[in-house]
Length: 261
Image (cartoon, rainbow, N blue to C red; front, side, top):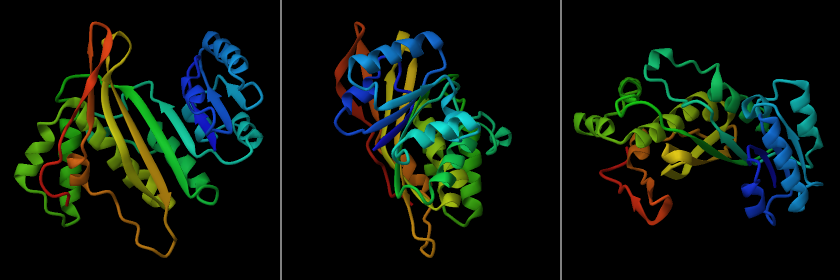
């Protein structure tokens, strides 16, 4: 397997998956962190199994430059594990400002299109800060519900209200897979599945979310199902707590409620 993304200067991902991942393309924008990454790559036996760059991970996976293309050519196979640490919160408060041609939507879509003939299955690990007030995603959620209803799908007022009572992290974890399906996966011949959804305190106690998503290719002549909106609402996501600077062992699971239509 080939990994592409942001393992961080301590390359914790690569050390954990030492015996599963064969090659890595590592992105690290900070030159100081990149030097640490290279030092740890030598220390943990990765020095001959990786290439690195200061290019932003979005530009790397979308292969916007000749350098990115050359890095991909050095890998023994097409990357099937993508680790994308998003700098800015990707959900827009107002769906009218949503632009599928910029940011992670365009970058991941570009990667999926390039992957059509290269990989039948891709795992995307997406991490970002949860920023803003709890109502930040409300207008986006309302717009998504309205758009879904236009396709003749019934979403009751009770279910619609349930979307708005979710936590900020849960709203984010609904919006991102929905938009990735509509604006990337389906058009590229992939079906999106949510593998895991976690909210947790990051560095300095900042609220973070982590999504593990899988894209599986479908035959050209088969029906391409889109991920049901209520499935995203009902998907149980985990909340990891912190106490006295340490992660609490107990993990809360938000249970599924009602049918996933």
